[in-house]
Length: 300
Image (cartoon, rainbow, N blue to C red; front, side):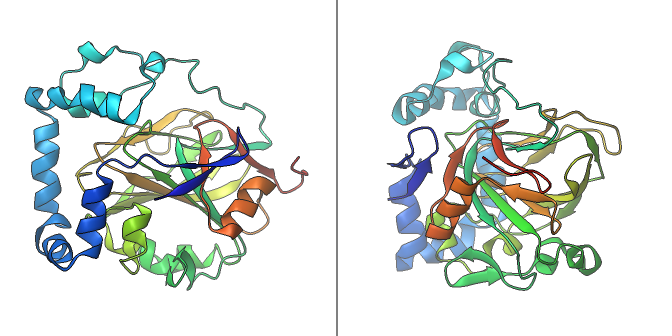
C-alpha cells in the first residue's frame, strides 16, 4: 500500500498501482527476485514488451486499463477508439486547457504529472533514494565536474506511475543542451522496488541534460527508464530557445521518473511539499502547477 499526499484535499490517499501484486512478488519473493535479476530487469524483456505495446493487438488492453485505474479520458485530445496501439494511448496528449501552466516567471512549476519528493541542502555523495539507501550525483550522471556545481542544492524526484500523463515539459523559458544517454537496467521505479534495490536510479537506463533556465539557474534534468520503458523520447531541439510549458519529451509504457537538480540558493520549495517529504510522503502534483518560487521571493 502506497500512501501519497493530495494538495487539493490536504489529505492522504492510497495510490492505485498497476500490477501491484506482481510487483510485490517480483521484488519480495525468492522466485520473483530470481526472475527479476535473470530476465525482467534486462533490456530484452522491456524491448519485447514495448514492441508488443506498439502493435494493434495491444489496443485491446486500453479499455480495461482505463476502467481498472479510473482514468479521466475527458481531458484527452483523442477518444478511446482513436488509438492504434496501447503505446499510442499511453503517450496521449491532453487538451490545451487540461493542464493550466502558472506563467509567473518567479514561480517554479512541475514538469510532469506525478508524485514529488524533495531534498534540500543535498550531500552530493549521499542523496536519499529511500530511508537507508543513498546514491551520489556523480554516479547518477557520470560527470563529476558538473555534479560538484550542485553542492548543497535541491533535488526533486517526480515519480510517474502508469496512470499518469507521461509527457514532460520545461519548467521555464530557456535552452536545453543535448541529452546524454547512459545504458543500464530496467528495474521498476515504484516505491516497492526503491525499498529493495540499492542505488536503483544509478543502475537504470537514463538520459540527462542541462537546462539553462532564465529564472532558476542551470538545472540538471534526468529521465530514468524503468521496467517496460524501453524508450525515452526527446521531442525538443537542443540549444533552441523554449518557453515555459513547452514539451521536452515523453516516456513509452511503464512507470518512470524524472529528477531535477537545482544549484544552491536558486529556489524555495513550497512548504507543504517540503513538510510531506520530511515525513516520508510523496506529494501528488500535476504538470504546470506551482511547486516553488525563486529564492528572492517568499512562498505562500
